[in-house]
Amino acid sequence: MNIHHSLVAIGGGGGASQVLLGAAPYVARRTAIVAVTDTGRSTGIARAVGKIPAPGDLRATIAALAADREALWPRLLEQRFRTLEYPALDGMAFGNLLIAALAQMNGDFAAAVTTVAELAGSTATVLPVSSADVQLCAELADGSTVRGEVSVRALGQPPIRRLFLDPPASASPAAIEAILDADLVTIGPGSFFTSILATLQFGGIVEALRSTGAQVIYICNSTTQPGQTEHMGVLAHVSRLDELLGPGHLDAALINRSPNLPNELVERLAADGLQILVPGDDEIAAITALGVRPLVDDYSETVGPRRQLWNKQDTLRYDSAKVGAALAAHMADGR
Image 1 (tube, rainbow, N blue to C red):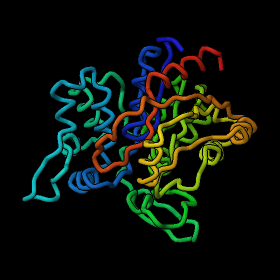
Image 2 (cartoon, rainbow, N blue to C red):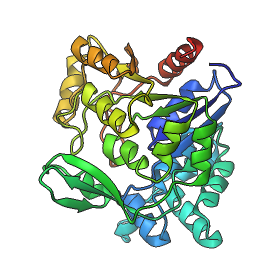
Image 3 (cartoon, rainbow, N blue to C red):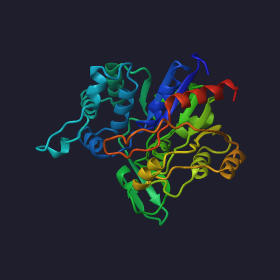
Image 4 (cartoon, rainbow, N blue to C red):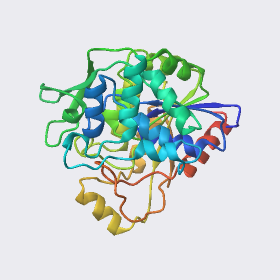
C-alpha cells in the first residue's frame, strides 16, 4: 500500500481512528465512517438536546485524528463537565454539545461534524455513516425485541438474533461514495453489534461493500464483550460478517493471536466479563474455507496498567502501528 491509495475505516469511536493512525505512513487519503446509533449517557443526552444522531464516536474520532492532540481544540472536545448541581451535564463531553449546537444552528449534522473536524485539525476525513436520527433495535433469540443501543447491549438477556433501525434509514451519499472509491476498506475493531453491524444497517452500506473494487478486511475483536458476544469465538465473528456481506465480498480478516499474555491482564479482563479470543488452528482453517484470508499475528499493544476510560471497559487493544504495517503488507501482496 502506498501513499496514492485510499483507505476507509468503518467503526466506532476508537477502532476506526486507531486503524487510520496506524496506516498514516502508508496512505494519504484516509476516511473514517463512524457509527451514529449510540445512546450512552453523554451522547444520549446530546442526542435528546439536539435531536441529532449520536455525536460521541464522531467527536472521539476527530480528537484522536487531530494533527496535534495536545492543541486546544482536540483537548476541548474531550473535556467533560463536572457538576453535581446539574446531573444531566455531569460527565458531558463538550464536543458532543458543540456538534449538537452547530447542527441546530445550520440544520446540517454532517456539516457540523466537518466544521468540528476542521477546528480540531483532523488529519483524515471523518464522516457520519448517516445524518438520520434513528434508534438501533434488535430481535433477540427468544423472539423479543429491544429498542435503543443501551438496551441492545444490556447484560443478562438472550443472544442477539438480528439488528434493525427504527425507522429504517439510508447511509449518507458521502459515506457510500467513499467506500466505492476506496482501495482498502476496513471494518472494526469495535463493539461487534452496536458499532460494527449497527453501521452496516444503514441502507446502501452493504451494497457499496459488495460493489466496491476495494479490498475489504475485517479487523476482528481481540476479546468478547459482555452483552454482545459472550459466547462468540473468532470464527463466529467472521462468519456473521461474511454472511451479512455475502460470499466473496469479505477478502480478509486480521486476527490477533497473543501468546504469553500476563496472567494479571487475563484475570483483570475476566473480572470485567471479557474473555481474550484465542483462535485455534481449526477456526483459522474454517475461516480460510469461507474464502476469507486470515491475517494472524500478535497485533496487541504492549500491556500496561489499566486505563481509566469514561463509561467504557478496558480491553486488549491493538497496536495501531502493527495493524497499519499488516494492512500495507497485505496490499503489497496484490491481494
